[in-house]
Image (cartoon, rainbow, N blue to C red; front, top):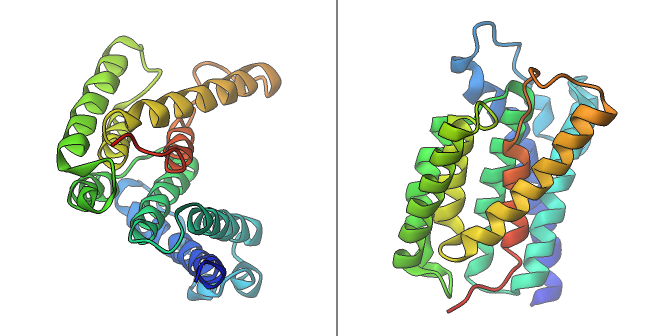
Length: 226
């Protein structure tokens, strides 16, 4: 069954990635003063949609391939279990949030708030988490990042706090520490590259969300403590 599950997960990831590419600019438009033209329907064709529609083909392919690879790795990691659809949904949501943050420096309430509710409900399906752990992870993650937001002098914003809260609901307690610490380390390395290698100013906006999202996805591969 596992031999069949991984290819299906890969195809699902490609399709999910194309849906993310198509829908996220539309979902973010309400927050933009001058939203750019949304991608055409042609981008919904996996891998070649960007070329067919002449809309950011490298971006389209990158989002689709990243989503597909994550889905396949999750299938190989979890096997044919009830966890796989939940983890694939979590990953897709995190990738969607990351794409919006990369493009527009926004973490949308329309993604993070419903995501927290869904993650709390889905916690019953994840061995080692459950509703108690998910609730505790949600509260602790929010508290930690709210303090960082207040004391960090702009290093992180409200969007990062909302994303951390979502990650806490997804990974529970104590799994949230693996997710958030990994994300913070990835973001810290990227920030150093951003400042020292790319010679950007501290005043330039830096999207921390993608690194928190990556840390959360990596944490999905770490076994939960029962």
